[in-house]
Length: 258
Length: 203
Image 1 (tube, chains in turn red, blue):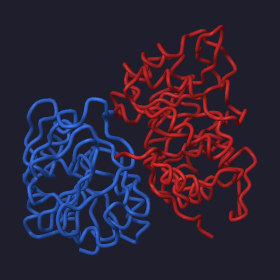
Image 2 (cartoon, rainbow over the protein chains, first blue to last red; image 1 turned 135 degrees about the vertical axis):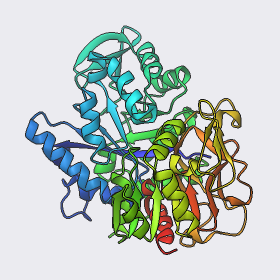
Image 3 (cartoon, rainbow over the protein chains, first blue to last red; image 1 turned 90 degrees about the horizontal axis):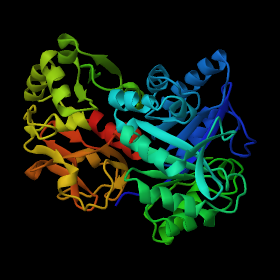
Image 4 (tube, chains in turn orange, red; image 1 turned 60 degrees about the vertical axis):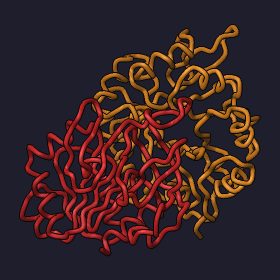
């Protein structure tokens, strides 16, 4: 049976990984290429590169880094951040990305999903949604969670799947950064609404939070996190071992390379 | 020298890099002479069967792959490239394949339980129905590889060298003499995938 995926997310700005990364085995903790190799060696099932650069020069650096990573790390790579047009899809796919995630770009122009899915296939188009509870309703936020669009989240996600999004990343603004576990209620609501893979993001604080996620939301496909992996609070190899012990289908990790 | 056949389908960046990483010299080409001079061929492919089969024919690459395979050259199809090696596909209509491996391509939806998601996307385990093929000499039964597909190869008979379980057994790899096919993406399957490519490059 297909395994539950564990996905570290790397935020990249001007060609460097941001958010304090703390690994004693790495010479250069802010090198996306080194960090990608490290995670791949630990048994990460996929990597997300999120481009938070604003400048044109930064974009160029990002694609250079992506090419370099894709030439040495042979697991699926998803790229997000600053994807507004099919030209943006083309730019990162040529550098070795396998999937591209859209967020604000799709909110501004939902047709982007149709266009990209037609050109590259549904499996290539990932919808990333930042969601928070507002007056008892799940609502979609744009611009990195700063702007409430007022749109109801479940119907937005359904619409995007109909347009051709092949996978959904659900980032709960309510649990993000709190480190008290994933947003089980929100994730269940999304899994009940769509038949494409759903990736949980926001809230992981410890290893048990991942076990809890897969126990409580059996339809969830993957758990994504950044800082708990970067700070070494959760070791991917150990997490995989615990998942297998726990009866959750997982691809075994390996000990981190020295 | 390995020739990665370029017929205008799919992104060859990862495949090319993964082969380079195991020390294989690669040329991405649609040049007949270059293909004839290569030691082995890889037929890539993503997208729809009908379009890809048409491109393979119109570029003359269908004929080249057939004749090189008949000369005994190792050939490997990957993902849609594997499906193209079979006789027939029922993906949106009915299309002829290269017929190098017996079998046909049908929708996964026909055989898996209704509650499973399509495409079959993610990491799944390999099982060997018969004796372990030489393509898998560096890996073990039960190792995980990365799949992305909505159609699958069936009726391949003894050419089925690996299967995977997605609510039903799905063909994961086929082999007949010097012709091989992998439904999964070895270039995206970490060390296990690289080990399969290495074994192919040693044929």
